[in-house]
Image (tube, rainbow, N blue to C red; front, side, top):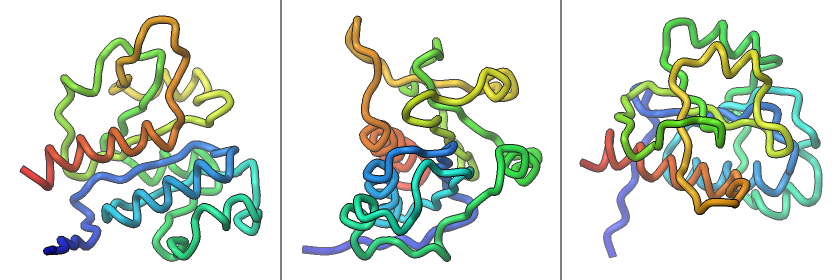
Length: 160
């Protein structure tokens, strides 16, 4: 079996989590990003501590805080992004990720599990996408959603 490895590049996509509040989901996302070579950014405050045993159980040995960019607030995050493209994943979007062209350098933002992102952030971000789902279903688990979007964005920019 040949194992492909890829180092994170500033040109690749980044995943950002807005104030995550479920430790197991954040840990699973850290593992996904680590295994696929995608940079993770976390906008604080988190709804848990990184020392939480539920978090540690899922993250295992994939946590390297040097590989995760933490922002003290959403304002710090937006300021740091300057003119970089941010894509918000939201169930409120009308555009499917299937019809979107991801680009190197994109930051794909996922909202808080319990509440998404505040309306003021929705208004600030031009590109808002959804994962199409069956009618009468509320939402996918955020870790599953991140995996779907990371796979498709990497397919478009790295694995073509």
